[in-house]
Length: 402
Image (cartoon, rainbow, N blue to C red; front, side):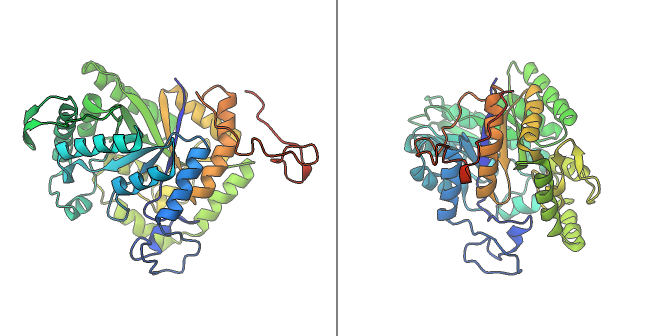
């Protein structure tokens, strides 16, 4: 089992601070400022293309694109970016409660043909009733998951190539069909920490996603889902969603993490914690419990930092350390059966390079990657007898081969 590395597309805006999404009233579309945060980047197609092309060059397999009020639409954005990339896959997040399952099946099939098979699907049931109601969804938490199970049953039925009938509590479909099923069928990524989510994952997910909890907690989750899937006669693969701050030295990485904290005043943290505390998501509550809203003891496991979750919902932890230390932690999760690592960092363009040029070679040296991206400097003439990648004629450092 190899490690599969994925990156993130910040379609709600990007920047050098954890509070960048609050810097524009409109998510950066018209660049209307409401706070004097510097270095904030609007999620326009030019900037997102830079990130997508960098991710492809650095060897990431796919990029996760989020869904929600403050993001650009994931389907439209990524199919546009697919025209600027050749191999990169797009892990498109969407909410099953706001779209017909047969239409979603058809969209996925069309997407696969347009991109020549580069679609992955991230099904987001939703844990915030306020957000769900904004999209016209008024079901409670557990009924949303029950609907998701039906939705995925219909999607897979529509992909069968034969007319498909379904009569459930939430969907009634007669002769549901995708005339040309997607080829290949896109893997379905799915996450959730509640009992209601676990049953859906066991029955329908190809890859179960967890947010970045300490290894012992992740093992409990994967054992739980693995057991539920076994009862269904299925096997499920596993992935984890983490931020990353990787530098040439541990000291530099932690200095960067501390700088991100410097932007957070107590009022900002308190307001964010109050808002996040209203979430119905069990996974979100688990994220909040890792730090309790306090700046103290944010390193909750070796090289695992919970600072992001002080102000941001969803994935709230980051791997922080030297390139070798971050690779150590990935190797530790991998030993628990985690195969897919969906990573991000602030800003996403620069952090993609820090990880891709620092951690990826470490993982390759340990035999954890099936393919290793070619250096963008291959073929560049050497300077003064030394590789062009060694500025000033300094010797080029390589991984120690572990």
